[in-house]
Length: 95
Image (cartoon, rainbow, N blue to C red; front, side, top):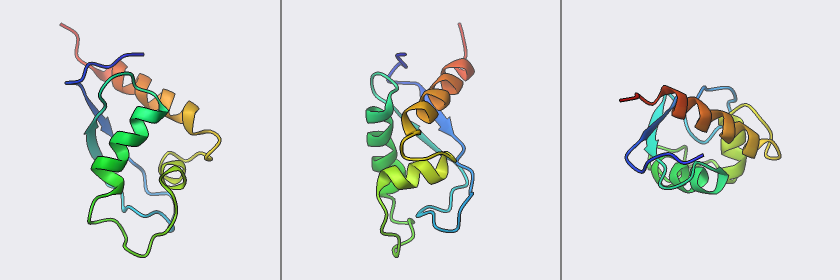
């Protein structure tokens, strides 16, 4: 699925676990190109995971953080990202 570079994916990240690096209240970020796990992780890392507001004592990986944020396992990340991408595409206004 392609999402136009100008499309904003509004990702409301729930706060499930006390071990999350990010106290998630919601973030917006852009995905350039196809909305897939690789591009999603790159955008998430740049905009959210590398944010200076991230808990400095957190030491787990971006995959572990995304799994916590999306309430899945690291193995299930690709499918969870597909669901988020579809929701973002479905929410995109049509002209």
